[in-house]
Image (cartoon, rainbow, N blue to C red):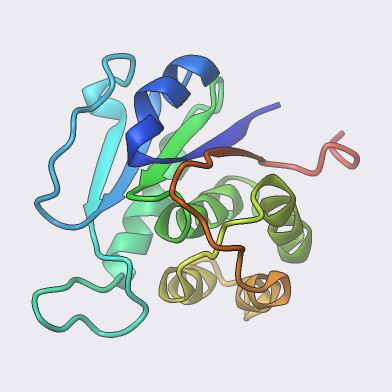
Length: 177
């Protein structure tokens, strides 16, 4: 079953190798440097310079925008799904779980938003998807509020230390056919 691997920055190389990822989406503050794991093809790596904030950017911070979400959607739709995609941010708790939800719905639009959010919570008790990314993703994917409601329903995740990668299946294993 195809899945999305969500990871903190410090564990991307390990997760890419462990899960056989060849494509990666990075959501980090603009100018935050890091080394792309060698197993990730440069042409299959998208970096989006965005801060983990849910309000209009101030003081040089960049809030998620529609352009960022459309880039996530386009990248996900180009993913061949033969191997898991790796999505990461600094801690793997807010931006990357939100992007994982958006990517999952971009490639499997017929799935139920609430079931997807519940799978996210089951995979990670720590995930607290970035509300702004979720709201923009909901609109961009024409979810009519369903994604926003689903994320609100799972609530805020537990406090995290940024060292808890997880795997989000694209479909409910019990109902995949």
